[in-house]
Image 1 (cartoon, rainbow, N blue to C red):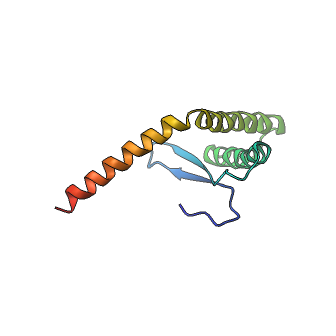
Image 2: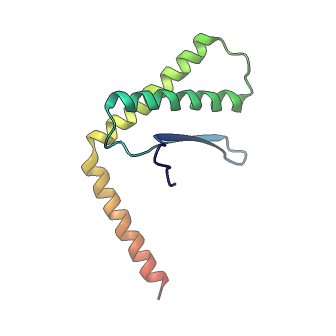
Length: 112
């Protein structure tokens, strides 16, 4: 997915053909963003996750405290994922390198 220059993150919801629903949150470039800014963006996206989940179950009248707990839960998950990725950059870079090599090998085989 290509981000416009002003897009910090994006939340998408997909139906899984009778298997349920999936919600994806993508985070744009964080190089020039502070941890505080990233947390604010993730709070915004956690709110969208909550909205998609309530829409999926058909719930329209939710107590505000329930909504707050949902956003807190999703925000905690998103921030934990960001923290894990930040702490495991070398592992992720190694996996990306392996996937890139496999993809290049697959393309060479497909072009023969």
